[in-house]
Amino acid sequence: METKRVEESERDEEEKEDEEQMEEWDDWQSEEESSSRCLCLFCPSRFGSAEILFDHCRSEHSFDFHHIVRELGLDFYGSFKLINYVRSQVAENKCWCCGLALQCSRDLQNHLHPACNFEKDGKFFWEDDLYLKPYMVDDPLLHSFAGDEDEEEDPPGVDEEMMRELMSSEELPKLCIDGQSMINGDSPMSDVFKETGNTEASLDSMDKISQGMMINGMILKPCDQKQKDKQLRVSLANVAAKQMKNVNEKYFGSYGSFGIHREMLSDKVRTDAYRGALLNNPSLINGATVLDVGCGTGILSLFAAQGGASKVIAVEASSKMAAVATKIARDNDLLSEDNMEGEEQHSGVINVVQCMVEEIDKYIYIPPNSVDVLVSEWMGYCLLYESMLSSVLYARDRWLKPDGAILPDTATLFAAGFGRGGTSIPFWENVYGFNMSCISKEVMEDASCVPIVDIIDSQDIMTESVVIHSFDLATMKIDEMDFTAIFELKLRTDPANDATSRTCPCYGIVLWFDTGFTNRFCKEMPAMLSTSPYTPRTHWSQTILTFREPITMTSSDAFVSSTAAIGTEGSPAASVRMTGSTVGQFKSSICDEISGK
Image (tube, rainbow, N blue to C red; front, side, top):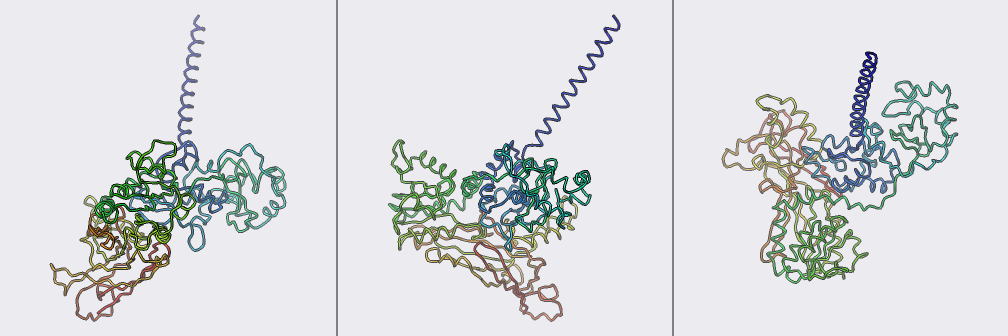
């Protein structure tokens, strides 16, 4: 009887241990499943598949992975490097396509935009083999971004002659996974080659592996990629020899982020300027045919309809936002019958067309020179950066009447020098009572490398404001978007101080723009949209270009006799003369020339 109790007790303990092991296994599985979910490239969200993640990136972060891969013809490892490059840039709060450095991840997410350029000096941003090394350890996205649809298909056979040539070539020591050499013994994978004994044996065991060597599910390639026809694919993926999927999603689908549109609609300065121009100038809008280029939610089209326009053509390239704009117009009884196929008829005036404005002829017919008013919110950071101005000018030349109005009709780019308060130096000097100024030097060096979008307090502006360039949107040509301007900065007059003895360091220049709805077209009530440091802030903020070293300036007329370099404390500069250039998009290329008295 006692023996039976002991046996039952032992069984109970065994069952308890089994249950505990199962719980531990479940916990491990749960952790494994969590870690295997793909982390978004731009935010903390995780997704169960690469496809869902890429849909999210396209709609929320203006990053259309499949379009980029298709447009640029990226192969497997080109796509692999793109993912690692983007992760590396986002980790530093930098825009992956324009390189702009933002203050925090939230600012970066608000800034993200569709890319118009993928190259620097003729090479992709992610060309460096550095990006063959996963930026994030055990990144599940790198295992799954190529998709699973073709797993059941047998890949074509390996070219053994090519493989033997590679194995015997000097490229062999450069074979790598995760940045480590596979042959010279500094990786666990080198054991595979030692065990096979010779390259012939290893080749025989790799039948049906396409354009690469696969060992334990890993594909190896030479890191330098010089011979395109003999490239071996590098992957941590569990799939061999797959083609990137052909997808037909439109590039401008990436404009479908509601966060971007909320930010713009919440910008009261921006929205009120357009609203005032469209509602307070009846002689311009009443009975007019209005073309809205890049309508987004359709807010400008709604204002135009509210202001009395007889017809509004709202053009939007994003299929998602075009659908949203259509629904908003319908919900407000402003949708035209042209958009009402098989639906209840409305007497609205807005017709939403989903396409790029350059391709509108494929969808509807607009008679040449038949539009009374062309309106668009086309401006980018620093006015021209990633702007839609070329599309607006195209629409103007095709459809605007000779005496038609373009809103806004002027745009002006300004610059001024800023002082120490416009930098982060004061912050690091007193952090909760502690001096951390040793950090500020590195921060300033980083800031001097790229433009920064941020707000400058008007009190930190130390020079007079100068006009860099002005545009007349009614008459300018597309090639006039590229310009070179020479401008000169001098200390502004400070009535509170003795201007003859004022000396202070200039740490950089700040750029901003104004756009005008002038009385040329807005007869009753002209308006101005300004992004100046002297006016309420907008979502454009200002663009800051920081000098590597501050330039000491003076407003004194007295001659400074000194052997010190001009622009230093020993010999302050009377002015700073600069040359600024643009090429296509706004790319600051500023040279400074410091002058003494």
